[in-house]
Image (cartoon, rainbow, N blue to C red; front, side, top):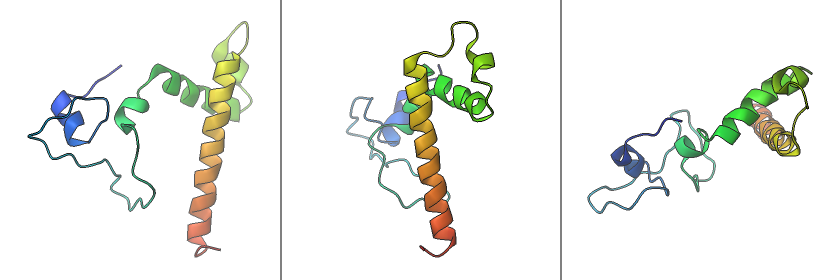
Length: 106
């Protein structure tokens, strides 16, 4: 797993780093007009967690009906399936919001 330098994470207001009084944190936001809620956790940290990476990779295979090839003998664990289901729900929610915005909020 890759970790950014502590000062970089402090500038991004990462709640997983000690507060540095010399740094004025600026919460992360994407460069593409995101107007949703401010993140409550460090996106760089949370998206790099092994469980998140496994779920994202698993979702790609699951979405094509190939999850068995990804997980191998023994099949997927309940935990992996729950993570994939949560990710799929979040993807559907984001897709719906984007389609609604493209239609002018209808």
